[in-house]
Image 1 (cartoon, rainbow, N blue to C red):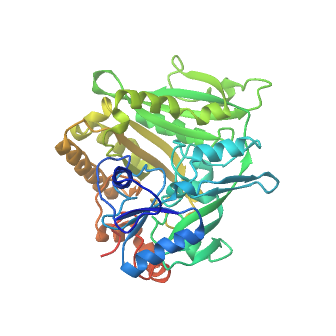
Image 2 (tube, one colour; image 1 turned 45 degrees about the vertical axis):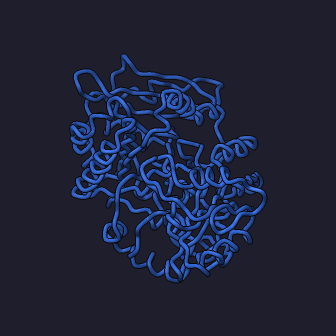
Image 3 (cartoon, rainbow, N blue to C red; image 1 turned 30 degrees about the horizontal axis):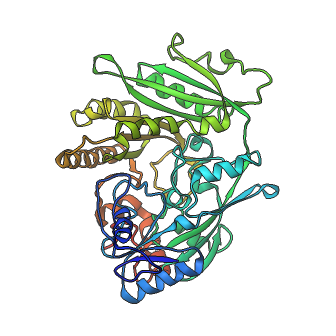
Length: 452
């Protein structure tokens, strides 16, 4: 294990290397919060994670895990404490005969996909962006294009190997140490550090037929999207709101139907009865691997334009679907959201509340839900602008709560302990008990201010 920082250095590490390592751990994809740690550790085994936690416990230092660095609001940072960089725990092994895959917490989802597809398999749900780490996605939940059918990424976990805040190595599942298992998945890293996860796999399709269906009316958009989400012939259903002429927005459903390639699907049978504009529908066939890599081109473009390295005050909410048809257009018409038209994207996903099984993933009441993501890029060199956008996030969050909406914690929203208590509701006390049992010294923070 390497350890870099004021608490000690293993091996011949130069001062510039130390500063660079600490600087990386002080920032994230959001580029909004900066918290400089005292040390950064890169464990390569469960025992080395236990050593880090023993060191931190003896000194009462806060500890946070860092995966791919894609947090938005400092969730993987810790000021004056220990950052555990999970990047060396990146082994991925497929067990095709068992329909399972074992991945280290620091493995990237792109590696998970590569190894699974080599066996003709795939996780039922994958995050859109495959550059994040396995552990980082599981502690928040993880939504993807198939979430309307299979829930979040965390719902696909069969077993976890973790190290609790007390330094105990535990293997947990729905059958063993069930309380810890449910406290870790979508539990914001409060009770244990994930070492590795065992995920279930399903057969991967060879080809998919992708439909993009355009709507001017949000009501018909939500109706069509829900109809497609209930059709088992479609494996992935998601959507976007896109800027249109005259300051308006158009709504685009993206639906994917797997097929074997022998004959093309019957488009009229699949989408013929929908209310979209049939003159501008887009239909194409893609290899499944190509479909999964669809965000790569956008990432390359954003890196070239510089938007990738600018602040990202993103906000994700879960809404009751009956409220979404009026709530979403009202939010997009708000002058505070005007920047979304030029530097941002708006994602919309249909969800089935019954498919979302992780107990700590908070969701609105009912089964028909909608996920709304406001994915803004802040203007360069304008700290006040970033602060205004974060404040706007908070305002939209409050509006969402009034209609029964719930925050997805992987967002750039300031939250105090009383906000988290309201967020978790009846589950808060159970999480607090798990925290007291598995992290008795309260050293695991993961950048969330859940406790006073």
